[in-house]
Image 1 (cartoon, rainbow, N blue to C red):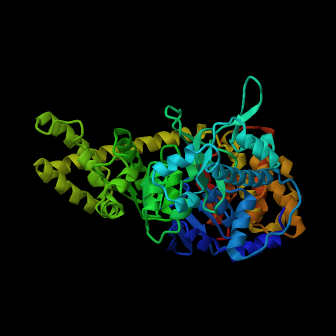
Image 2 (image 1 turned 45 degrees about the horizontal axis):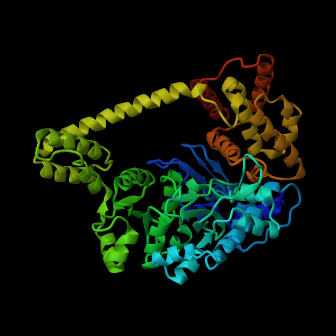
Image 3 (image 1 turned 180 degrees about the horizontal axis):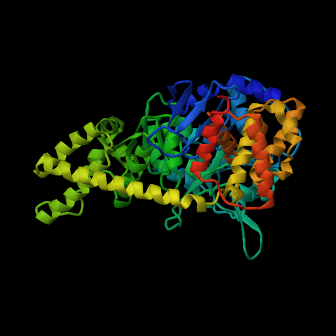
Length: 583
């Protein structure tokens, strides 16, 4: 475990409001800061930053993510605890102390990053090896040598054990090659073989410059699959990364170009547009959209012009809009994708296309006529119904009225009639949302709590335990008094018992309460729950008598396990009573 003195220094050098402010837009709300949560899609800010407290932390009342600045970096960057510590230490110019203990997970991640780097070097050298098919393919795609080198493009020849043999020679184990998804094991013989063969290789690089995975494009005429991508590994989650984001983040533009594949990205980049990215062999994900939101306000979608590309565009528009990005649509005529367009017409014309890109709403409204006969009444009615659905999804009333007037003019219908239909659809959706909310509320007691599963059947005990813990968070000097009345093993729910045990171990060593006491051995979800307990009781004045009552309550409940639950009304009444204790 790292010395708490170092962790305190690390957090002092990395104020949570400054670090979070580089990822999200923070707004002052009294003594607190608020923002839209970067860990789930929302329209109203529900993430609160408690920057002016003794132990600065954040908590989202929507998705329940929470923790200190280390927890934040760990979650938003997808890092291990020690990787997050090192990232913050580098940011502040600090040196991380050498620590002993079990570091198997961290060591594995470091070895896999070393292995991926070595594999990327191997593939790069194979471009100029005996089998020139990879180099020929890249030259046919008109890629310059400097771009090939910049992206570290490579080639995997048709040998079954080319990479395997070289990586073993460098000292990497079979287990590491399997964990990195660079090799597979034959079911019949049990022998390892190279996963990528006869493919042009595209290294996938994270924001810190680490090679974390690979994509491979076949050079064989009928090779299947056309593209083969790394599966998720301990250092790679494809739904959380974007190809070429390591270059795009350096762009001064607040606009990103979202392309469909590796070659589109590289062609656009070679044409002088550094701010281009692509998802990694999978449909765009909310996490990828939130990553783009850290660096841009606007995203121009430049997917292929075929049916699959257009369907993907519609889905991408909704995902981008959900995280607060302004999506725009690139219209290409005379070419199926950006790579072909740039080759045929050149970079200046592609730049003009970017400037003329339609906003997403115009694109969606224009698509309402797709598949309908514009000359028939049925076709017009069908298209209008689709347009009503699009208009009802526009939250800002002023924006909605502007588009509504345009649609009314295009379809030659009275604006008042169209507006009434749109308002009816909005009301219908709101009623549906309320019904869904009630269903969620009704189902909540039956939903499993992954952090503290026993709480659902022991709600009264869980709430008493929470109050005892929160009292100790605020008054760590009272630990001895509390331990004289109840021991950690007497707690009923497992998670709260684990938290109490950590306090009972650490506080007698002279440590003050801090979320850092839990960060290394607790999961981000568990740390978030602790932050949630703090937030839940922020306005509740917990006195020693209330703690004694909670302890007595736990002892009674221990005699009658699962003896019922405390309703929200009961909890609110108890909290109100505590607030009045001093009066």
